[in-house]
Length: 172
Image (cartoon, rainbow, N blue to C red):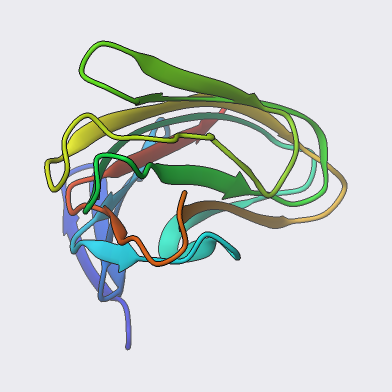
């Protein structure tokens, strides 16, 4: 599928994948990746690399990363696990915080690629809930991709990342 590009003022909008809509601030600042459709998955290994819900990193650059991710699970006893994969780095620190119940959260400080937030429940089955990601990444000596992943805590139980989820990033 060819990119669809629309320009409005200082912004450039691209549809590079059927599920993804990317908004780039052409004059600098934050770039946004917005999920346009729900993506469901029911496996706990391997994690699903969410096609297009990523951004390219450049060698030697630093990135500030934030995300607000809408998740759901078909079972209140099964968590949707959000994770990340990234290229060779000099350093990274990613914090992911998700609700586990109506009154308690779980958070995990990720310091290695292919890691995830270990969520073992959701507040309510089939209801959306918000997960937050915040982090810094200092890319190593090669270009790569910062990739968001999804997996179910329990094999066979469907979890989903929902349309409207946002990944934003910027060089600093």
